Length: 206
Length: 206
Image (cartoon, rainbow over all chains, first blue to last red; front, side, top):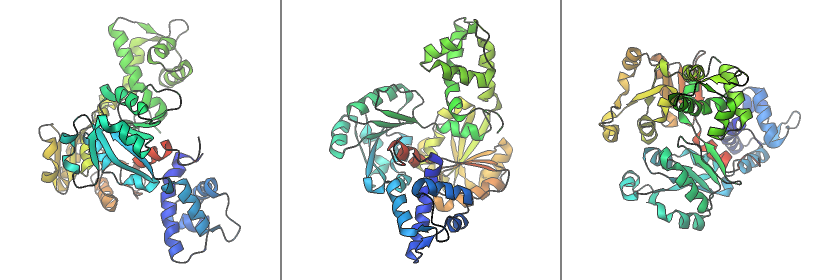
């Protein structure tokens, strides 16, 4: 498995490889990539090593091969769709967030108990807020296996259970509460406050 | 330094200790905490060990002491304030996010080039959107050292430079771009898409 730190840099490598391939660069070395992007050479070698093994001596990597390998790891071909439950401020912000496409993930639909109230500022965007009762049908029809929870903590477990009933088996949880899930369901807790706290030096000196 | 994983659990320990202290519990063992919160005992011992050392045999920890130690690590006394630049959807969602208080951080103000347009849905909340030209004065007056960037990638470096000019030395960056900063300034990149991609199984099997 590729580390999260490496994964965070892959879109940048991919963008660079696509650019140099267009310019006709057939082979590319870790050294060139390192210089172009300003990352340390050791880090670039390690990142690419986990994606593609070591490049050949002198010539490095075949640009098109390395590009394909990055593309398949970043899974843009798989067209993964995720749904949001909770179309409050955070839910709507995520619905409008464009960074997901970089990893081949689309987020087109949020569900809420009160979709009319919530959908005002996204009208015309091609993104929808639907009533929570429509979630299961939508997930089955679109083969959605990933859910994002952006409801208040008090409602998160109920929403989590509903998602699992709808066939979702991977949950990104923004609510400040630990979720109980059966085996086979993964949960990742996104704690925005924690990132800020660590940055502020809480938890002791680095 | 305490790990991010441990830090993520400390607010829950603290909440529990405050509750049992009110009920008159003078001493508390890692075993009791583990049972009450549903975490493994080894994990609880490790977490508390990094905060407070090992508890005493039989009696465990003194509830009030452990509580104070957690409080000082979670730094609610320090009253850290952070500002946001970019009062679009994500910026406003963060401005309304209540989880920051758990780590003693307040986020009361966002800055934008067009504050009037941006402030509609937060009026009455006690939170403000001000014009970007007011940032330096605000940061100096309130001793703000932490900035959150929620502008589009194309504007992020400019905003980053402005923050540093205003005395900010720790930046949480939501824009999809790497920021160049001088020595002494820390940047943490928050990549929401990446969490979702890892959850979706991108990056290989776990």
